[in-house]
Image 1 (cartoon, one colour):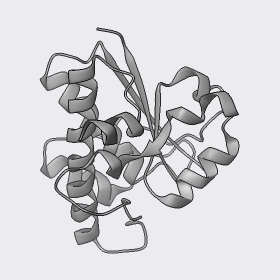
Image 2: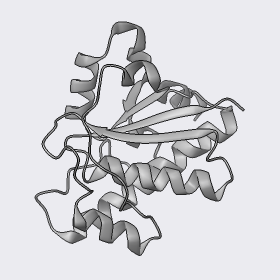
Image 3: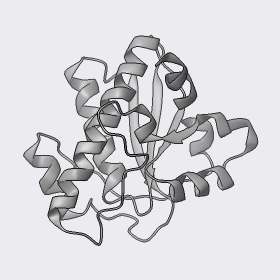
Image 4: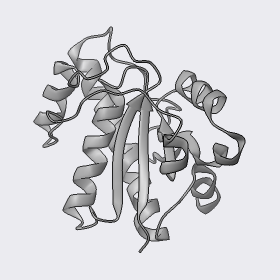
Amino acid sequence: MDTTRVLFVCMGNICRSPTAEGVLRKMACDAGLHEYILIDSAGTHDYHEGEAPDPRAQIAARKRGYDLSRLRARKIESADFVRFDLIIGMDFNNLEILQRKCPPAYQHKIGLLMSYATQHAASIVHDPYYRGSKDFDLVLDYIEDGCRGLFKAIASNGIRTSPEQVESNR
């Protein structure tokens, strides 16, 4: 099995993308595939660079067995478009920024997490930052759904599965 490198991206890299990183990492570890799926997260902006995930995201994640405490926010870099096989945005704003920054040769790597979801019809994972703690639980529901679909696609296809390939397999 080839190694697949997945980068999750949201705006500040303190709520949604580190949560997705923690969820997919646990799925990979639980399945014994952590050596084959390398996972990271980044933000489109540097508002929170070097900070730990939002405490509300950590609390919601911890309740479901995910540890985000060691993660630190960073901004996406040009090298990320080369380094990662899949670059997964959380919403249309993130997607548009990624598409604008990404060299044409790597555009095929970019997609949305919810394109992998099977239980929720939402197109995006909304930003819970300015909302209440219940929104962090809903965001986690969406992220778990999207990550389950993404993990299944990676595990069953041996890797490097773009959102377009997942859609054609449904």
